[in-house]
Image 1 (cartoon, rainbow, N blue to C red):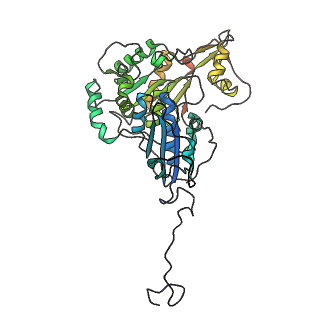
Image 2 (cartoon, rainbow, N blue to C red):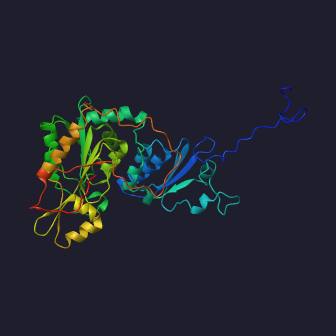
Image 3 (spheres, helix red, strand yellow):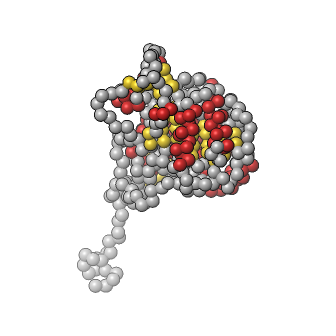
Length: 407
């Protein structure tokens, strides 16, 4: 047969090939990527970061996907977190009364509103998934085999590294990052369930430096309690959100982080840096297998401690329940200095592969992307539950009689 002739017989016109980009489910072909629009509507540091990390993790479940983030640019740290999330393909920052109406998701012809070119042409008018903050709860992160990682842009690393070194942190020695919640940031009120004694963390800093041979970088905001100056200690709290990227860089290069329940610990987990979060009044916080979590203690009126398995079984680890208990004679006790030291020593022993500034992370490189997503997500705790009974408070315990497995 003449090569110019079609396959339907002599003299027929060659039938041109067609490729329907919608023939296969979105995400399996580059012509039909799985499009995600994430509504990053939170304003708090950790919650905003969690939405980005969750959305980026969804993107990683597909061979071909694109991610747009819709957010209100009303906090100085938001742009830095956007910049540190390399999976984002487009970011739409809303200012003041500027918004994107839901009609912008109209994929049909003759939409009721004029849709901007930068929204319409990339295909954000017809996303396959719209992510809300409720979908990005911390417990949902464990449903991924591995969540997405934040990363400092390559072009920023040299300058940020030089600035961190200039603050007194030796690039050839390891350092840990610490953060604890303290009132004063943007009029955030005090919280008995989350605010530890600053003196315990000041003592922890000195112990890390003088006894463990490490260095310490503290993160926070300008209103935090000042610590005594000491060699090997850098305090980034005074600059706060005015230089968020420097704080993010410190998180990315730390050997590990010790944090009370607050946003910076969540962000550290998003970077993949081993994070130990203590003083947790809620069940879910950090989510990586290399992370650790400690819950606050619950004491009865007569001083006995409720075991963690009892508190877990009775679903006491959420703010409303603990507030109710504290109003009815129970006492909520945060981690002591001895517990903080034991937690720090545990993280040190688990990170012996990091002797200087962190340059490697714990990645699953051979996983197969499923090209699908299960909703609602199953809440799974991949981080390690940590408890040191020798330092636990209480005069006796209150436990359950039925078998129960801590995870």
